[in-house]
Image 1 (cartoon, rainbow, N blue to C red):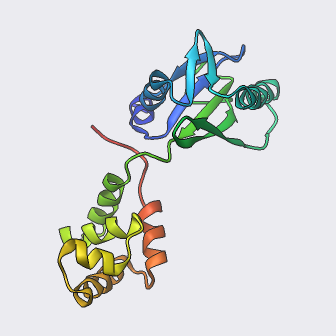
Image 2 (image 1 turned 180 degrees about the horizontal axis):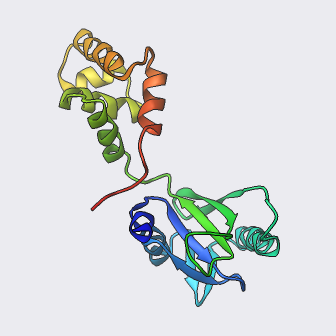
Length: 192
């Protein structure tokens, strides 16, 4: 049951053993490592493209392993990828973690993960129509109301009327509040 939930997470989780080596990962973590784009396996060692980033990652992992019973500050870093946005990597202690042999975990977020499906999920929760959902997607992707009206072949006043309906259904009063709601009101999981 727990392993199914862990595998359904969109967040890539990578377990590190007492020796600082790869000990396992959820499905998202395995996929990320197989891509070798930012983080990759070189034997049992997790590597980065940059020597400086590798040194920072190793130091964070070594600190997490060295102090298993002491609450430590969460170490968050960016791991560069050629021609793409960097991965965000958090290094946390293993403790009673997700994998039995884990002395530390890497929690990895890819900022280029497709967001439209996530927005659709939240829109369904708030019972938004297809047009309202499309409008929400456009707003989250940075489009202005005039741009949205052109893309949807609607008058700007019609787009504003849809936006007011969305505000009422979602209990917000501003576009910024709506976008925050859309980006934070979901469980980051993909159930198959």
